Image (cartoon, rainbow over all chains, first blue to last red; front, side):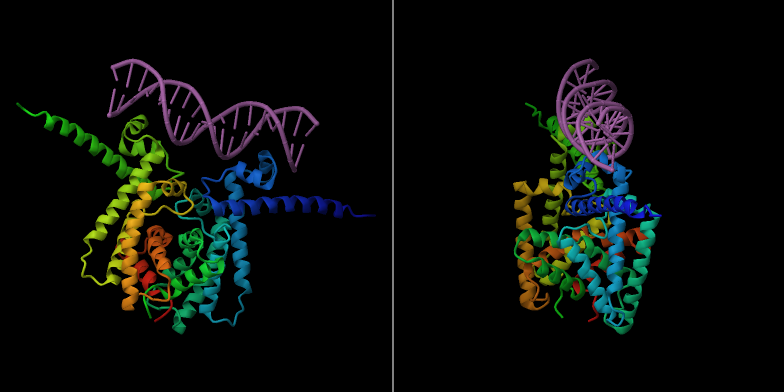
Length: 204
Length: 204
DNA sequence: GTCTATATGCCGATAGAC
DNA sequence: GTCTATCGGCATATAGAC
């Protein structure tokens, strides 16, 4: 007998595609405005569906944004996995920061929301998000330790401070300032911020 | 004949003291949450007066926050003026960043609101704020140029990028991360961030 | 599942007594 | 100028037809 699977699968695929579109719009909007300022109407009209339909996919605004942030986190993990193992640890860290900055410069949701956003409270109460963030942090922390052992990252800076400093590039306002200035292309902005992050402002 | 001045002055002094208290509470609250998330009820209850009374002092929420930001800006200018003229330009820049970080670590309103805050739109439309910010920027820009001529600041980094990088410390999330960690005292946090800002992460 | 229409609650701002 | 009480609007979330 014929299996009904294809038909169901098609419906599910449509469902997932719709959800994917919703998440993508949410990511873009969260990059443009804060969690508090973004409304469900914004998302609905961006996707092109009625607001009520959103609630068939996500139970609440917090739920939607949590899902969006989890997706970003997953992409971050996937990116880290692509960094080849024999790359020097310093280059892996540079790659991470470049990825963060490229998200930021294209107005996609940053990996971390700005600190005093209402979204931060939500995420810090979400076990799945925290677990994922912890795993990523462990991976990066290992690279930091290796880089410090090699002497490529300053060993005088505590590893935790290095980690936070890297993560903070995910919502670095310098990117927005430079973008508004219109003087630099996106790629240049990324390189400039990357440079000041690792090399500092003081002459060497 | 007796002048009525003292009595009037006393009332005015009370009025100003009240306004000062309102502005101070606003500054603290704006440091803790975003402009969008802060409510006039928050401010009122923090000051200990009724919400309606706020509107006798400030015409709107935007007005109140604009006044708060102008006050901060003025304090920043006053601080810059205290930096003795014969200090090396690099030390003046360090002093500026230290001042910004000290504000941040004590949860006072940062000099600059985080980029995607609704407050940013308000401020960027305010001539007085923009003029003040411009004047401060010119002063700092001069120091940057001097420091680059001396060779203490990396001349390869465009002055504008240096300026933005310094300003961005006003809302650096690393401070909040480290504060939440509870592992470092406020003064240590300031020094750590100051160090990574000027010296970078890479070993020298 | 998608829509229109609506319930519910919060927040900025105001009215009006004192 | 301070208060209590309230308006008006907007945003989250839901009801109910299709």
